[in-house]
Image (tube, rainbow, N blue to C red; front, top):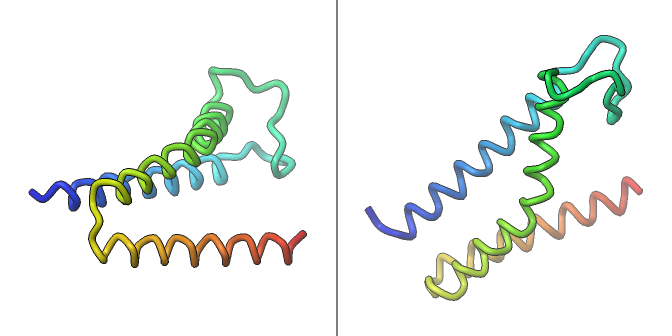
Length: 104
């Protein structure tokens, strides 16, 4: 198996894991919950608490993880496909920033 294919597959699986964690953290709410706030009575034994913390821990590490992956792709794999991938990432970042500014 090609090393680049393995790297792309691992990155894809990471993004799928992030999506699954987001869905679990979003939809495993207690009744009458306030969006974005965790009930103070929840502790480590609660699935809602664990799902929420797992997702937020992943988010905290995602920026560094994704930057490291992109940096490795730039250094070790100077293929035209990498440049198009980075152009796509840049386009997505521009769209996310633009939407974020509009919502603010």
